[in-house]
Figure (tube, rainbow, N blue to C red):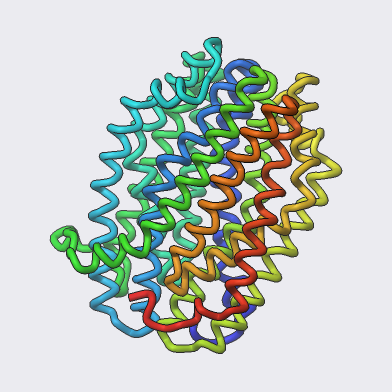
Length: 441
């Protein structure tokens, strides 16, 4: 990332990420497609309502590992190979601990959380069952993301893709087998996901123990170095908080959607699955920018950092808007893969056409956040998204929906809050404070 063509570096790194994220999204969508078409609207609603809660818990822990990736990237850019090894071993050891915590916490507290969200009584049993089984794979989920974070910090986005291909195939085959042919029901969809998550985690971890390079993991060296862990947590904690507060905002949104019944839950849940595909180029470029900026900051290449930041943002925004136009015109056709019920399709299409033309704002938000994380300014995205994507979004929905109890009012919460946050991000970008050295390690 510190030498050669900037565009080539970013795109070469982003393409495997794109394919991996595409598979990851297909991986997540398979449950909804199989459940919605085999088990019906209520079961689809149960799977849909768990999404925001899953990201609330998983997103915080995975956000913590962003700190490890930034530290590894900067140390690698600076040629500090021993520092890379220390950061990698500390991050993986911490991931094992957090994976166990997530598994226990998620399994036992899901009924309480779903109740707080106002999940309808006819959906609650399936939601609880899906959630509990899903979180039995918490360790696999966290370990896969932590291991992939190490690879990506080193500029390697291909190996995570290979492991994801295997796990996606496993998840798809087992989903169809368990739900359609063995009749296990919604629990079978969750079990397929758990098995696939552990397979991908094991593949990634085993490769880390055999790879040639400073990021190689040695079982005897798996321990947490307190000073390194402190740096990783200081760097990753704001991203974890950011992920959580976004999820809290989404949980509030989901709670309001739940009040409109199972059809609204299924329709909006289907749209959110579709929207996940929109996030693919956005997240890929954001991740590429984080790695690019962290390595070049470590190497002291500030001019290269500026050029890369602008180039990556233009690519991310352009790709997102092209997808947005496609979604706007073809939403009913795309949503039909989840459900053929007219009411579900109408609600999902309405949300898609409200938000899709504003995907350029969503993309710019994530690209700028990725740049600031790579520069070590992880607190900036946290503060901006806490204020706009959580507090402002919740305030808007609470007030406006109370006055105008129409579901479309909820849909407008997203483009409005994207607009506010992107303005703040742009102002901070041109001030140039994020380019100050010494903020990463």
